[in-house]
Amino acid sequence: MTAEGGVDTKIRVATERDVEAIESVHVASWREMYPGILPWEILDSLDASRRAAQW
Image (cartoon, rainbow, N blue to C red; front, side, top):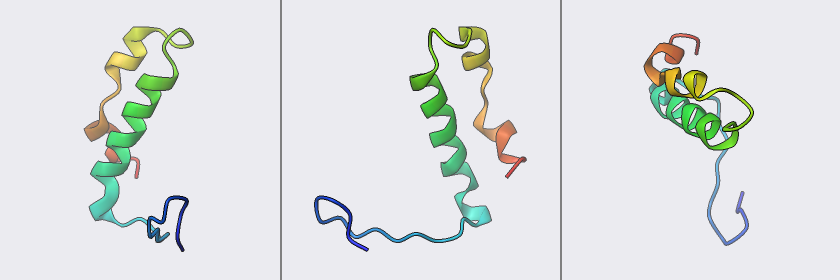
């Protein structure tokens, strides 16, 4: 599949090797999107390594 801009994109099932990257993006996106909606205490307390266990 080629995405807009000609970047070759492949979609696959995530594996254990992907957990760290997934959680880093998850935490970063919450911190970007939820200021003013969620208290900073919650956003600051997000920890990718703790959440990785959920995956």
